[in-house]
Each structure stands twice: as C-alpha cells, then as structure tokens.
Image (cartoon, rainbow, N blue to C red; front, top):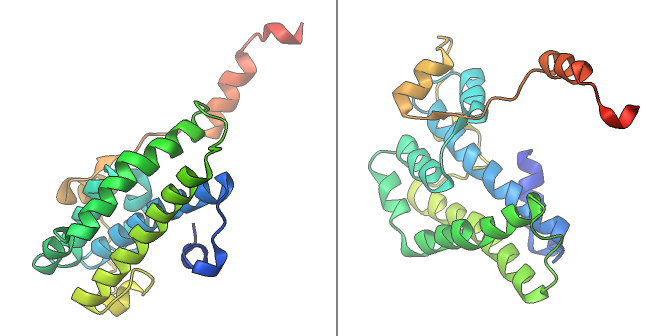
Length: 197
C-alpha cells in the first residue's frame, strides 16, 4: 500500500464506517508498521532494495514489528516510545480486537460486520493507532513515518547483503513462501478435475 493511500485513509474527512473501509484501514496499519521497519533497517545500513525485500519477505507479530522498528530507529528513544501507555493500549486493541475481526472477515468466518458500533470502534482503533504513533514519532524524533529514510538520517548504501543475513542480524523470521506461478500452473494443469467431465 502506498504512503499517500495510507495518509489519505487516516484523514478524518475520508472515514467511512463500512466493512470495505475497515479492511482497507487494517491493511493500512500493517503497511504503516512495515514502513517503520523499512526506515529502521535503512537507518542500520541496509540498502533501499534489500530493506524493501526484507520488509516484504519477513514476518514478525505486529507487536514485535513495532517494537523492533522503534528500537532500530533509535536504540535509546525507541523503547521509550514503545512504553507510552496510550500506544501500548492502542496496540493491544489493534491485536486483540481489530485484528480478530479482520481475520474473521478475511477467512470467511463472518460475511460482514453488521453492528455499526463495532465497525466504528475497530476503524477508530486502527486510525487512532497510526495517529498516536505519528504523535510519538514527532514528540521523540521530530519525524514521521511518511518522511523519507534519508530525512530520518539513513545514508545511501551500495553494499548488497543477502536477505538471510539481514534476517539473522535483525532477528526477522522468514515470511510464508508463495509457490511460483510456473510451479502452481504446472501442478494445476496435472490435476484430473472431476467437475470438467
């Protein structure tokens, strides 16, 4: 998800209390956390391309992603941001409430959220969490996740590192692998589908 899309979603005038907006909003939160991880990796000597790849191809629980990103950004101030009570509570609500509804919708356990109060709450949780993180980023670093890594202080890096080395160094877990199109297509074409007969 592009930064401008995330920025647009969190604008108060753009809020829609719909299931589709909730899903977009939740994806925006996850993309926002990935953006922070990307900035943290860039500030720790990982090239732009490798930081993008490591962010896309690694997995950490949302809670761990945010904490690690903040520490990578600044080892002294990052943990202070993470200890802010509003942020901790907002993150707990995101993980224990909003993400639960997102998973139920995404995996077909529920078709939609019909209770408008619930929909408002989980959308407000998501948007408030991004805004709260932005508040603390400005308070502690005078920066925004929407700023370029260069503005944060990341230097241009030419040295290429292997993604596995980056994962080991920063303790990132590999993300789930998606079977290649070629392999998927080959397997699909070999299936003797009964419904075709």
